Amino acid sequence: MKAEIIAVGSELLVPGRSETNALYITGKLREVGVTVTARVTVADDLELLTSAFRGALSRADVVIATGGLGPTEDDLTREAAAAAIGRGVRRDASLLEGLRARFARYNRVMAPVNEKQADVIEGAVVLPNVRGTAAGQHVETEGRLLFLLPGPPVEMQPMFDGQVLPLVAERAAGAVLRTRVLRIASMSESDVEQAVAPLYKTFTNPGTTILSNPGHVELHLTAEGTSAEEAEARIEELARGMRERLPGRIYSEDGRDLPTVVGALLRERKLTLAVAESCTGGLVAARLTEPAGASEFLERGYVTYSNRSKVDLLGVDPALIERAGAVSEEVARAMAEGARRTAGVDVALAITGIAGPGGGTPDKPVGLVYLAMAGTLGERVRRAHFPGDRERIRHQASQASLEMLRRALLGLPAA
Image (cartoon, rainbow, N blue to C red; front, side, top):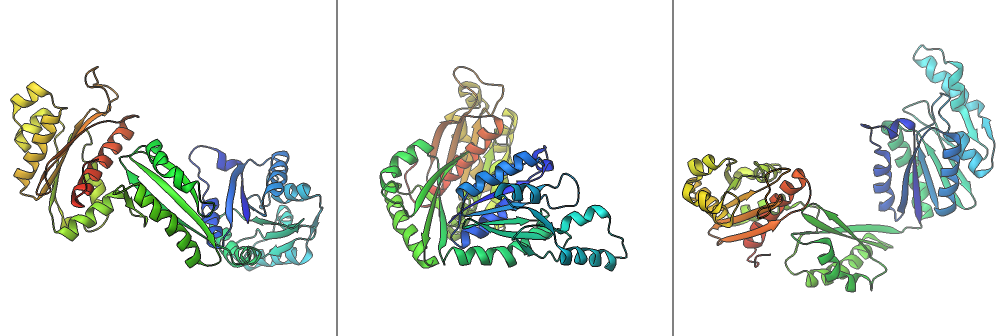
């Protein structure tokens, strides 16, 4: 089954506002085997909303709208949905009486505008709202399910969980969707695609989606089955082949990010770490300490942004900096060795580079970064040139240094 979600409200289309209901609904629908194929946010405009409903109902088995069920003139979801399916709207007497009683419980007189919230599409089933005044509605039209739900998440979520999801799950006839995300660092999207496309194109279930992020690529494997076990077995068959085609490259299949994976490996091996960072300004240390438990392996971090700090804190030879430049393989290596020596740790990482936007030259352009590792796991140095703005370059550099360490911890060759 396929579903589309319509978020209603002009306020959702201005800077600073985010729409979260669709994410919640998407996650829940996937658990019962329903795939969300489109999500759209529409302003409070009757013509636009009517068109959105017609389009969604022409494509999807289930259409769920959130918002636009309030009492004001710009709350037009009911009217637009009714127009889209060619039905009228009636005022429900029992729903109107319930609204009045709700206001009375709080010693308030219901304003006439609130009567609009008792309007129901002809043939619709009312979905009670125990947390607000906007009742939901459920309509079946030409074999498709249409749901109108309130916008506030505190009202929408319990209504969806208790009154919508069971109906959709029943219609989905027990289908189950499961997704596994395979994460790969220090490879481009095109390289990953070239390695796995010949395999995943032979599968229709699971389906594969490739997503590129700064510093890593994700393979989303989604399978349908009659049970969670069947869906997971289908995924595993494809994932096994991808591991063979990407030996040592997949760092996570369980949702963990790279700093968490690296931290776990350091703890397992009882190794201590120091990091010396120039262009990343402490980003590697910050990412490693975001998960709990970093005190078990991270001894200290140096932010050696200036040449003087590289000399004073890490013992880098000033003549080396003068000769090779602060952004060089030689200085990166010296920073790693100095961090390991002064911190007295098993392993040290070092990063030096040009994050921009200025400071680049033809010989050393913006995005040039040198990564180094020294210690009991051996010595490694890598030259990289990362694209993007300052933030993107810094993140990619931190990701590459962590991947360098992960591979060394697992005894894998340098990437």
